[in-house]
Length: 113
Length: 113
Image (cartoon, rainbow over all chains, first blue to last red):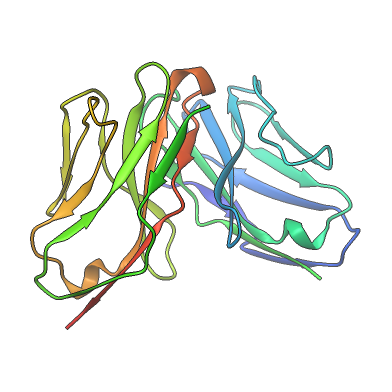
């Protein structure tokens, strides 16, 4: 079946612009996770959803970052007023209910100039 | 909070050599432990996992045993191949953080013919 998909695969933006990153989880998976992979910080957890609810937003690096999930499916990660340190690969993963294996998407490579 | 420490790389081995990548963790409660692998140009894939103490995860000739007494989950393979060249990430998940994955910094492995 279809895996986790993310769009766009690559995004180049100018400092100060807003960007939206999209994640389509595996159908039927109620848990969805966002991570960031960068050279300096390794793999960092950002936020997770159980259904449409995000119980813990403490992993978001700053208030410029926000995320939502609608219909228990698609999720969008929004970065406002992007900074160069936001450059990274943003990864999305889903799992059936949360405690099981997480399946990762291919990521969105974000470059902020 | 929870954390994962894994040995620094890069690790360079000749084909058919024995591989060990060390991983230790700090966590409250009863975490699950994972090894993920990232092959060049590809996304993160689950390699193996263990959900309770003394469990052994295995896949593709790789093994790791969940040792609660030493808080370790070392990855081993008896005879590596060139195709095993990749970055390996140790990770844990815990119910108190919605099962979000907490990753180590990754160990790059290069296997030469």
